[in-house]
Image (tube, rainbow, N blue to C red; front, side, top):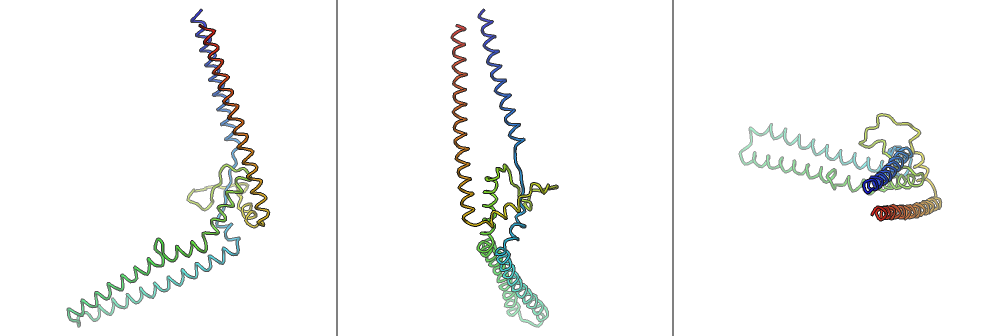
Length: 232
C-alpha cells in the first residue's frame, strides 16, 4: 500500500513536470515563429537627408585639403632627399650631418601633420563627430523607435560587418525609418506617447502573468503537500 502510494505520487509529479515542459517548449516554438525581423540600409537613409549630404560634402572638402597639404609635404621631402644625395659628395661631414638632421626633422613634421589630420582623435575625427555623427545617431534612434512601434524583434544593418548573402526586400524597413525621421515633431511625440502606453500595457500584463505563475506554483506546492499528508 505504501509502495503503491509512493508510485502514484511519483507518477503525478512526473506528469506535472511533463506538462510544464510541454507548455514551455510550445511557448518557445510559438515565440520563435512570431519573431519579426527587418534590415536597414543606413547609407541609403542618410543619403536621403539633404543636410547630411551637405555635412558629408564639407567633411570631404576638408579631407581633400588635408591630403593635398600632406602631398606637398611629401613632395618637398622627396626634393630635399634628392638634393642631399646629389650634393653629398661635395659636402663636409658637418654639413652632411646638418642636412640629415634637417631631413629627419621634416619627416617627423610630416608624421605629426598626419596625426593631426587623421590620428585617432585628430581633426578628421573631431569634424566627423561634429558634422556626421549627429545624423548617424538620428537614424539609429529612429530605428530603435520604429522597431518598438512595429514590434520588430531584430533589425540588421545592411552595410554592417554581418554578411547578408540574400535579402528579401519585404524585410527592408529603410523607407519606413526615413519616413519617421521626416515626420513633424508633433507626430513623433504622439507616436512616442503611444509607444510608452504600449510598453506600460506590456509591463502590466507581465506582472499579471508573473502573479498567475506564482499562484500556480503555490497551488502545485499545496497539492504536493496534501498528497504527502494523505500518504502518511
